[in-house]
Every structure is written in C-alpha cells, then in structure tokens.
Length: 255
Image (tube, rainbow, N blue to C red; front, side, top):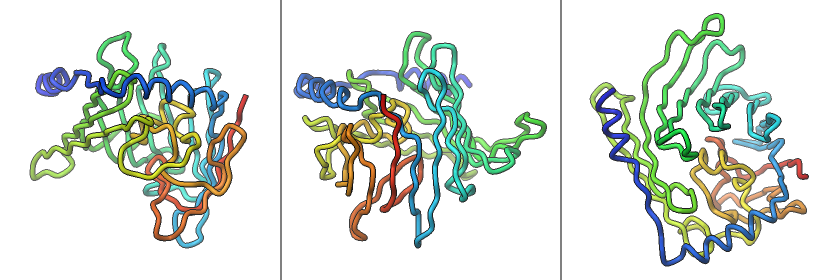
C-alpha cells in the first residue's frame, strides 16, 4: 500500500500546452454551447458480421449515467455497466457485470487527489469480480493507472502498472496530444460535435476529449452530434466503452 501511495504522489502533477491554451479554450467553449444539454440514450450497433446489439443508457436526477444495459449480447467485452458516485457526484466505481449479477468482467475503483478535486488520479482495476447475495467475494487484481491532466481538464498521459501476469509487473504509458482545434493529434475530423462531449465521464472512459469526431457520420442531429454511422470497411471504427463498430445509430435526449 505504501508503494502504491508513493507512486500516486509521484504521478500527481499538471501539464499544459501554453502556446495553444487560449485558442483551445475558445474552441472548447464554442463547441460546448452546441450540445444543448444532450445525453446519449441508446446506441444500436453492429460489432461484427451483421450482428446487432443495443446499449441502453439510464441517468440519475443530476444527469450522470448510472447504468448501461446491453441487449441481447451480454458477455465478454459487452457487460452491463453500473456507475457509483460519492456525495460530490464524483465517479467512484464502475462495474461491468454479466446477466444475473453474480459475476462480471471488470471492477474499477477511482481515487482523487484531494476532496475538492474532480480529476481522477488513480484507477484501480480488478478483473472477474464474483458476488454472492450481493456481496463481492472474489476478484483478481489487474492494474493501477495514474493520470496527468492539462489546464483544460483533459488527460495528457496515463501510466498503467499491470499485475495481470504472475511473471512480474510491467508498465504501459500513453500520451495524448491535442492540436489547436481541440482534437487529439493524428486522425482526420469532421466539423461536428464529438459524442464524448455529452458527458465528462465518456471523455474520461474513452480517453478522448476531442471536440470533433474522427469520422464523418451519415447523419447528425440538431445539436450537431452523430446520429447515424456507416463507415467504409477500410476506415477506422467508432470506439465507445470497449465496443468497436462501423455501423450504428445513436439516439439522444436534448433539452
């Protein structure tokens, strides 16, 4: 535990891109205004071979996600998700469970730098949790991920220390660089609003704070969010909560 706390303390620091902070801040504000309090309510997608699956989203009175249910495919890679929060409305746990609720795929516990901070600095990840009478009785420790943010609250680096394999620990480091348009460097983007912008939790979980989408959708809704997707076979895929798809429809509730 002491070693974990030491690593956590070493990982907590802030990075910023001073040269493009002003322009990115303006782009961020302009795009946020276009969302009009929209939230994702359903994603119907085809993960493979003409098979269709549906993610149904439920939210609490604050508009924070509490469940995502998968229909009909509930299994490896597509569990039902359950979100837990503290009194400050900060995400504290994410459970990915299979049908029946007595077993699951993943359990994340999230930690913050201090009581007033809203950025997650540590994700403790456990695999294959098992439950009996609603009580967790077993899980496998998998990894610990530490996060670094810029002044706009976007992840710029994550460092994962994995303990999944008994041969020993190893570390994976990912860096996230944003351009002056507020998008992750590399992909080609549309000029519409990224689906992840509908809630900070999607930005965090999908590791994507981009303002625009790295694809061109067939249709967008009135808030300029992607509504119907049909990407060419040789193009990239839409990535959302470990689900990857080229064809799908996304429904929203906008106020």
